Image 1 (cartoon, rainbow, N blue to C red):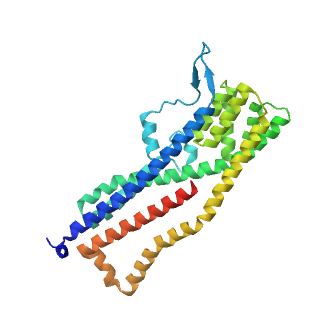
Image 2 (tube, rainbow, N blue to C red):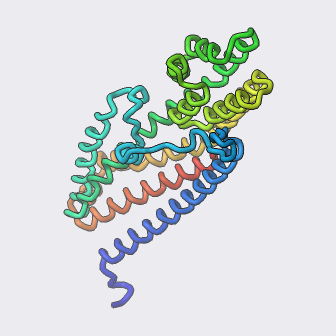
Image 3 (cartoon, helix red, strand yellow):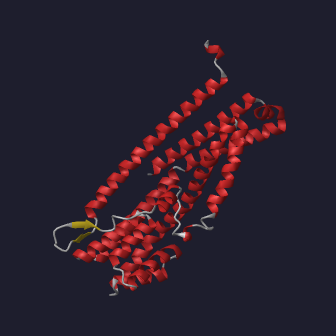
Length: 322
């Protein structure tokens, strides 16, 4: 077979495998980097984690490090769902999978129109990716708000402790005076302490509930202070200052990457604007992408390249902010 008579399907298959290889390589590189960061974080957290002496006083156990996760929770976390935290979402959480079920069907119908019956595999893929994207977006917004509000809550606790009030009552003050999200978390902590849970257990549970390392830092600081003593107000002040600096650095990174994010938006919208303009000026050119079999393959390749470019720019922006 000569080079000039290569079947179009073979070329499309080779291009698809090349795109998959590039995407898989990028995902593997990002995953290995994330695992490395997670291992370093765990190593640091293990070195400073609170410990509990056994009855014999010889063995040590990490507190708050072991948590049993049910299979349903594992499945929920796979798509970024927290069924036990309905307050994270502006709508009932079960409406998201239902809505994305319809979105996946619409996406599959479009892919079937372009490539045939094999396109039905886009149905579960669209459901999974759409649900994960939307739920993770809401969860990220919730956590960003918590991080912004935490330094002020810590400053409030510092002022209360300096006035001679115990830490447990200072947490109640933070629950009353803080903004809504932080007030809810400290309110749960205060309620648990009032019914008999220890401060250390409540702090670790709050850290696990929020999923933020800043709350783990708070749990470590207060637990170590309760076990070993020390200047609590100075520790909390330094922790609040560190969190403020981290937030400022994150905002500065977003400002520096604003050009890249604007470029991504423009490059995403531009093909659709050009297609709309061609539809008005020369509709016969656009109709060929829908009626002609080769035009369908070209349209599918264009959409795939656009999605790959968006994922690449998104990964570059995330790496610059990490």
